Length: 629
Image 1 (tube, rainbow, N blue to C red):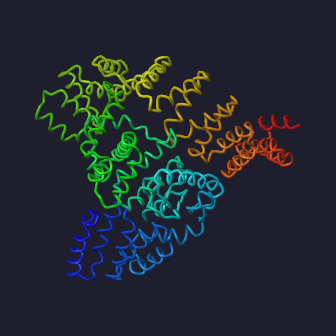
Image 2 (image 1 turned 90 degrees about the horizontal axis):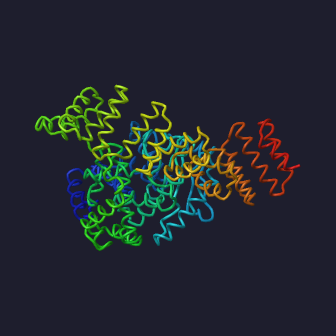
Image 3 (image 1 turned 135 degrees about the horizontal axis):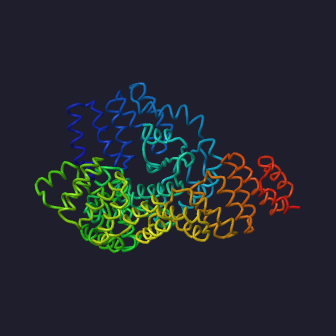
């Protein structure tokens, strides 16, 4: 497209030709805006829609697009005025009606705008009134820190204020973001406005999400809204990766399979991985691949080169020229160096059997390949896999058996046969025989050990279950699933040290999984490991800020490390989650403990009395009462 390609004269010529034929054709601008939206060109869209409303002041669609994009850059007064004009012209635009209802009914009554202060003075925060007391304790402080970090890294201060809006209802988030009631992301950035889903009703690491989205603010503004999608997404992923060790995606197996299957696009066409993805999984892998390219660039050429590339995008230069001028290599050379780097980093998967479902063709294509070459075991095995994914299990089993007959060492055929033997036939012996055949052919690995763990669990063989899980974890130490089972096994067998060691690993593997953080905090407090509990608590509030237990454990650790005032604040945060008894009692005990250590005895006794009223049998309250005497 001419405008996206920075061909302004070409765009102007086409525009003149169109308007010469129809001087009232405002839809010319509206249609182009759809493409500009994908390229983050929100300010340009506002300019185009302003022109469109002058071309045809009665075009409701143009007024609606103008209003939506004014809202997306934080101009709410002008945005709502434009939407009101749009509604008078077109009352049947559902997206428009949704947004107007949200602003005029919901946001005005249930939400509030809070100005940031101190390091967060560059922000405005929109919180639900029921969430302000809790989220305002954490979000502004973290965003102020993130802002300072990025200003220093990029040598650039974006236009501000940046407005951050957090919604406990996904419908409110979705309508604010795109006018429709249910979209998939947990956060979206428009350059000067960030929208996000609250962690209240969904398991979401709010810290990771907001840090990621703030990264977009810097990339979009520094590049003057011209950064390609793959680059800004990869860069925001990189920002979270280098900020906290657990803020990363555990997608190495999928990335390895995409690499082996030749499905990682070249850098110059990587945007298509987002725009032409077949499945949501393809989009997730595209995010991860983009992040790893940015990691590679930062490690190989240095982060200042990334800043230089953003500046080059802002000058209107395109991908290949940006790479050449920014890094001093061609796009093809960058592709080759990235592949070599990635191959080395993922070498642990070499030789392992891995089922690459994303690489299996459609059943019709697989069937056609077998028809053309019926004696080819690999093609027959691929057909078996395609049939399996289509849930045509009897046909899949027949194809797998045929492939094994053609080649007894075909690992894919044995895998499909094993899955069917265990899941469909419940035949443990046959399943084991197929797994053994894969291992004999040199294809052991994470996938097979997980299957053996499933078999052992079905047979209630704890020894074999544990052995298979431990081997699976050795084959791929980035995956949390075997560790969860190992932790549950250690808990059931009362192997406390093993359980603690597993929890310490688990919290570093999944930034959104809440249970390991809560259990680790509880264990650390039980063992009086206060320093570690404080360190873990700092991360736990990003993962599970609505957990009163997390706040209580964190407060206990702070109190015991001589930080009673911080502990009081943390306990108040726990109370802001509005916990029910006995959890409220648990939090009040910790507030009482902190007040006592802060020499506020009268207030401590009041909190302790409140805790006893909520939970008369609380052992922690009784123990603290005895200490305070």
